[in-house]
Image (tube, rainbow, N blue to C red; front, top):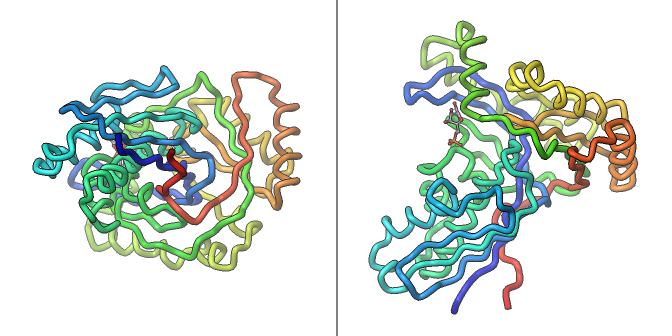
Length: 316
Ligand code: C5P
C-alpha cells in the first residue's frame, strides 16, 4: 500500500494578544506563532477500503470523529469525491510525542499532516495556500501548522504573514500530565472579565490588530535576539489561566528562577516554555526546574525552534 510519513511539529505562541470580539463568536487575535522540533509522526496510508481509520499510540487520543485528524480526512473525501473513489480510504497512524491538550496545537498539527498526506496520496497537487484554506475550516491553528516556521497570525489566527525564520533558539518546555485547560473556557472567561475593554468599531479593531506587524517582538525576532524576544513574550490568556491553575504559575516561576531568559504559557496552556541561550543552558535550566518541582506528573522537554511546519520523514 502506498503511504506517506509526515513530521507534524508543535507550536508555541511567542505573543498572543486578544484584540476583541468578532461577529462569528471567535476572538480577533494578534499572535506570533513558532514551530518547535517537538513533533508527532503521522503516517497516512491508502487502505484500499472506503473507510477512514485513525489509530494513536496514546490512548487518550480518540480514533473517532472527535479527532481533528479524522475530520481532516473526511473533509478531503467530501471535497474531492472523485479522487476518494479512485484512491480509496486511508489509515492514519499517529505516534504521539506532543503533550495532549497542552496549548501546543497537537491536534491541529495532526490534522494539518493528514491534509498534506492526502494531497500527496491522491495526487491532488494543491498549493500550500489551498491546503491552509481547507485547514482553516476545521480549526484556527491548522493553517499555521501547515506552513510552520515563524509567522504573525491575525483574524481568528488563520491569517498568516510569514516572517524570517527563527531557528535554533533553545527552549525548555513543561506540562503537567494530569492538567488540561479547555480553550473555549479560557476565551469565554477572558471575554467575561475583559470584554468591556474590547473596541466596539471594526476600524479600531483592525488598526489594533495590524499594529502587531510593527511590535517590538517582531523587531526582536528579525534580529534573532533571544534576550529581547524573552522580554517581549506576552500571552493575554495567562490572566485567566494562571489564577485558576496555580501549578502553571509555579512552573512559569520555576523556569524563570532556574535561569531561563524568559518564560510564558503557550496558547491556552497549560504548557509553559522558557527561552534559553544554548543547548547546554537549556539542559541546566531543565535540571534546575526538575529539582524545584520533583513531581513526576510534570513532563519536561528540551526543544528548539525550527523553520518549517509539516514535512516528510523517511517512509519504508
Ligand atoms: O478554532 P479552534 O477550534 O481551534 O478554536 C477553539 C476554541 O477557541 C473556539 O471554539 C473558541 O471558543 C476559542 N477561540 C476564540 N477565538 C479564536 C480562536 C479560538 O474564541 N480566534
